[in-house]
Figure 1 (spheres, rainbow, N blue to C red):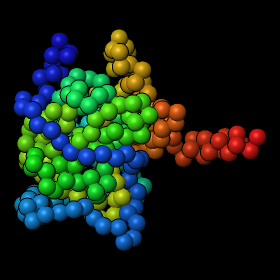
Figure 2: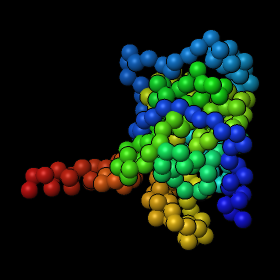
Figure 3: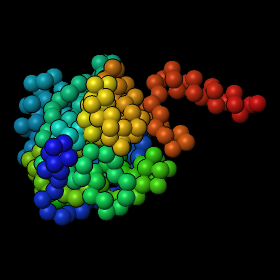
Length: 268
């Protein structure tokens, strides 16, 4: 049964996570801004992890410090790390990591204490990296974002972290979070202002949306679909905004048209 198989990925023990924030995607860091916080423990872990991940990156034509984008599919239990080599090529998939545990069923987080892992569009800045996590290493995904707040969704402290156990968070094995944390840390350190984290129940293809049409969350998933499709088509992280409590996905042309319409409306 679908819900049973999803629930089997939920945390075995009850542990909580940490923090909050929302924005769009991944630009250049402004001059003079600081990099992610660090500790001697984190430096030691990154030193241990760096040689192996650098070799994997080199074998695939990537380099440590290039911009990253994280995409999560709850039903498959997969966290993807995409990287951008530059030169206008867009993002390419570097590696897919198996999620060790996450909480709840398919569908968004609605209330504090509902044991649900969120779905939607989030982002992580340097300040949201948590080198002092009680769960090995962690970063806060930024729940609740502007959409969540506009729709009266409550909760906080939603992380991607280690230790393979969670309530409401996405838990990885320690080895996996060490790699993911290093990739994110180095991207932020090298100038990426923040990296996007897009969380979906499953790939939002028309076939899958039709398959899950009876779900009470189908309208919410349909609202996420333009953001999913925009990345699939362009391999660029789309700009996601919130208008009147709804997600809006806009390319450069769409954004300009929206701005012109808004300005025309104000001038009347």
